Length: 72
Length: 254
Image (cartoon, rainbow over all chains, first blue to last red; front, side):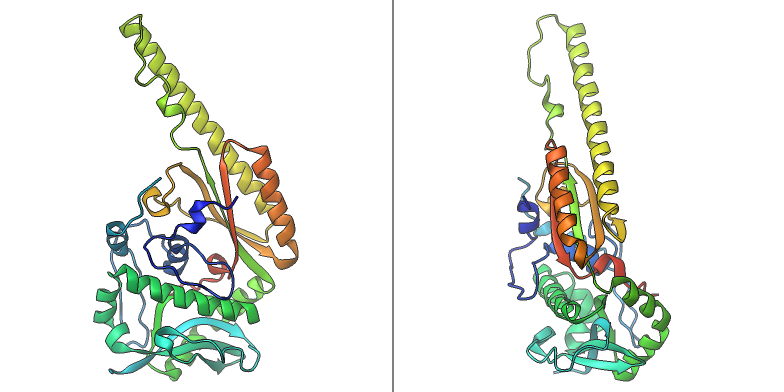
């Protein structure tokens, strides 16, 4: 029983992914942001003079919380 | 339309010719491979009006924008991972042009070789263990106690003891699940427990972890998970995958 946890992405949008099982958004962001979306902090971006934009995303949590699912 | 830059999704080795022909990246842009020293970076164009420094700061505040980008990023990585060993990049890794991409590949060359060797023929599985939502906590609550204060305190203490005992047992179950499944995986990682407000699950998350599993071992891994569910019916064990090896191939960027 892979239950509601995997099937209840944060937010309302749901996108069909052709290749492979869809990852819950919270799990995906945990991995893509590499810091865990539950942490609070700041965004560090460097661009000027550097060819890389690097995002360390923590402040994001405020956004997610405003759009949160209601716990069961 | 502003200035363009190159958005990096993933790095792989010797991808088959034309494997991205029917796939699209962010904004519907064409996916391309930038080849360098035997590595291939999978990239597409993005507009700096949307992905430049200031724009990113703004856009990242919008969950819908973030979800679309994360889903597209993930979709591309799934495709790349289906074709060969893959090192996924974090969200919003952007180079000004293909020369910038090649410089990155130079910088990461050794680490990339190790990562791609490690993940080849393996995929990631996510396992979470949840305690049932607040069961022992409610013991004694709302019960009128005939004997008055002392009995009430005794009962309250008993409830707290029961709760502590339940938590201890639950914690041990989490450890046992982790140990058992680690034995089936080539690598294991614990991730921070997720906020119940994000998962929509009210039970305590006892364990949130990722396992890197040989493709040949996946059926056994799932069978192990089923066996653990039977052994520990008091907790909920959720298992998801297979996914690209996000937790085992992420390059640490400086």
